[in-house]
Amino acid sequence: MAEIQWAQLVEEAIGGTVLEALPPTLTLPALPHAVTQFMELANKPDADIRKLAGVVETDTGLTLELLRHVNSSYIGLRNKARGVLQAITLLGLRQSKMFLVTVGLKAAVQARQSKLINQASFWNATLQKALFAKLVAGLLKADQELAFSAALLQDYLLPVLTNDLSDHYMDFIEARNGTEMNLTDYERSHFGWDHALTGACLAHRWKLPDELVACILYHHHGLKLLAHPQLGRSPAAAVALSALLPDQLRQVSKGLEQLVMLQSKWPSFDLEAIAKSVDDQHSQLGVGVQNDFPLVRRLRPILDRAAACAT
Image (cartoon, rainbow, N blue to C red; front, side, top):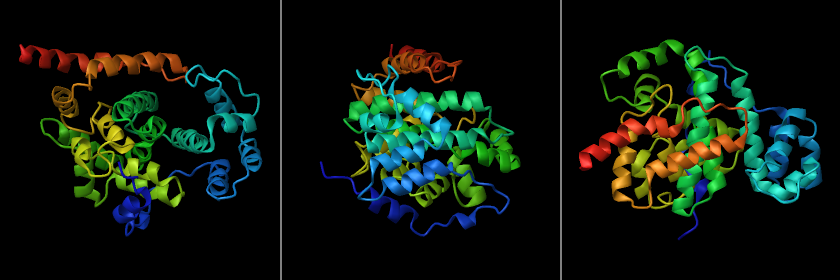
């Protein structure tokens, strides 16, 4: 399989897009300074890991999160990291970059309130999507860590957008009842952009890895991404499938139905087994996000209907 040209895909898709097209009243989140500085240094060919560790150590929150993550049973390392330098060495520079971006951005978004989104429920559903994407990436033999990080970031702008443009998003919530309306279709028709494109553009401006930007950009392409010549068996496809899972805004009309249909055509894609694994891993992570709505429970009604139809 040919190597994916992530930078080319991103440039072709968002090269001419400018964030200035967004409403001037919209306040976009900012990455913590330590994360921004870490990314700038890490992107240099002669990146010094000791200097990178020093940058992380300037932010107590990032330091604690990195050490907790590396030393968790989820990672499964035999040797526990006692400091940031050791943690970055054990995790690797690439995974360290993705993890710190995810943690930093989550903190920035959680610092903002949303009139329409409950933050706890939002991050619970987001974590479910991330774990789901990681498992699907495994089926695709794609990069599981990239799929996890990208799925965790796919909707990072929604708490901000639904707060600053709450009237418009309330119109979507009211209009979607009784219709098969997808959130991105609504956004494009009303704003001329959607949260996937805007999130990717902002991530690109922050100089985040091109593969992470691309996964955010394509996350609402659904099942059709499986037929993409480059992305069909990539982490981006796994993230796109995770975006079909339910959430507060019900972004995708009949997303679960699409996953059930995929299950009938892809023998390895056992939706219930994946959901059970997601719930099990969620409980093992210990990240302080309570799983009030287990994925198996969310899927049960439609799985039962599908089984009844099959008989």
